[in-house]
Image 1: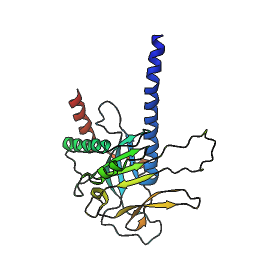
Image 2: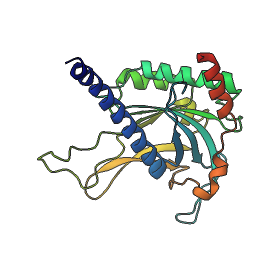
Image 3: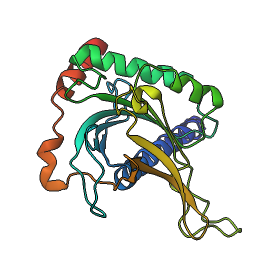
Image 4: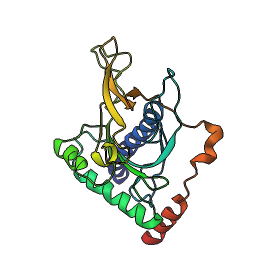
Length: 244
């Protein structure tokens, strides 16, 4: 009887962990396929509140529009620290404050910065399976930290009786704040999100740079050494010392 009660108590916890892990994996793939981010999962006891960590590959702020169709502009990399929230209720502003704290702690332990003059500027990314409350968006917009909010809706129920699109929308909402995309922000007003619709009526945000659609790109496997994060080991070592 005691064993049965233990299992019934543990099962919801395991289901929540499984859902969270699946959402992190799905988020990583969408970010790589559509938004030029190469991230890896962190997790663990001393993760510092970071679920995903890696790079965002964008053109240099001073790059000019390409006249050749589908031309791939040169890329620079921005360091991304991300949290993923696979919850049913709307994501509240406390997650923005929590992510700000994660960035400030990372900067204090590694000597990194979020300014454009830094070699690898820092960006906070909050990915949620549920939509964001209005106060969450307002809080992110007023943050001095370069902030990116991304809503990735849950996959449709395969057992649902109603018809669903063959290719459900993978991205719901993409919002970045002035500290990231404003004219005085990290990206100097070069990047914007535009809602794009297909002939079937399905839509998703597309990333545009200098008035042109930006093709998603990340380095291939042969360039893995380029993804080495110089401050990563120092950061997690400091976290481990602080929690031991």
